[in-house]
Image (cartoon, rainbow, N blue to C red; front, side, top):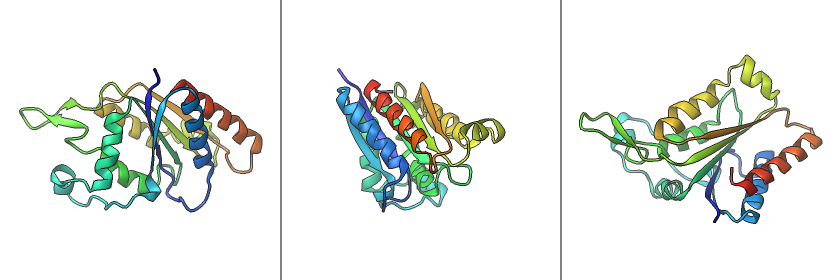
Length: 194
């Protein structure tokens, strides 16, 4: 029996084909051929507001499209988050989406003292795929992959998601052989459901 997989495509531009879209398509193809059930969330196609206040985050009700995304994430066994590195981090649209989706009540239940208690996403795994123009080693070792670590530690692991796999894809511009290898890898990851 296959896994239930949700891909969050975090590229903010859906108007044309980007390498991140090709990676997602390769992953989906592999996953379906591997017998997995796959759903996709394309953040650039969603219409949702940004959170602006404490009250919005803790007490506000998510709009319908965000509730549907939360339902997909509840359903999944494995979450794949794909995005291009912009100014050292994820694009603002994806950050706004994550703030809307990963809010209290969906990710955590407060304990008796009102502090974060039960992790509601425990038992799900994740794979983060980040594309970038610089070499991936420079991002990881010189810049410390700070934004990736923040996503892993402060959002995913904090809500119970783990284990978390990473694929950092550097030097994506004008490198057809490198792109082909990564498309093959993504197909393989999809087929394996990881």
